[in-house]
Image: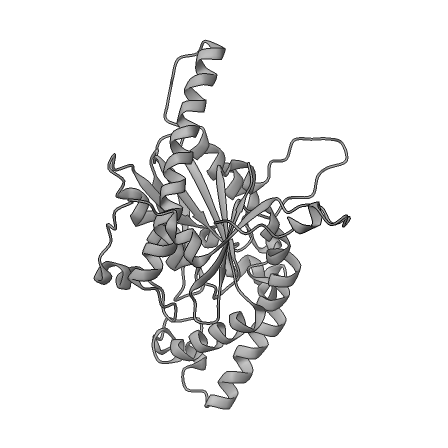
Length: 327
């Protein structure tokens, strides 16, 4: 069923090391759904998808149900591991330790849709676990700070985030603390909302979605302990696609926003709403070429091989290949 790239290298004398992943075609991965029931209707799936990110019942059944099934096994195994460790340490179970799933990938690849669909599938397991979803957008530095530090054209790059705040948030979640608060981001004003927070209260599973969540930090020479954001993850997913497809999807979404969000007078991009097609295309290409593409090549794509699961999209947004890291 699984097709291993690099397997030939193990037998043909090549110096290329074997791949740490098992590779599955779309059809072979779909077989791993087994008897997992479909718990989302077509109408519900349509409500969960983002603009310009088509996802069908067929896609959920073939790709996301097997992912959900795999995660159900992993969560159960992790819970058993915690209990075993407590018996070894002779400690009493003080609080529930959430299972944290990281979701990474480029702008316009469809992370938000995938995260929302996965959240709903996980929450509908027979034992109905409590599943929460948080995006790292809320941990972006406010626009005022970005402007002061000349980072507005670096928004979405690692240096534009309050990384310490994000690490504290994840540390509190992993410690099982009650009512942990995270800042809220508005995609209308394109800024963190002052004074507004979302509260996460001891979920069984937390999904953390963001551009750079798999990126390691620079290690200090003195050996000081500085955790990576991904150190808090129990499982990580990278949603992948070809660069040309990402550009096309980004530009399609950009033009669609002119007819929707950009018309809102409160929108950060309201000034683009009445631009002629050619001028708007120039703005979109600039944003992609000089911000989003640079961030993808410098910071996001290099983290792909750190993921436990890589889902590779084709030009039609359907997942064509699945890569699962070997244990």
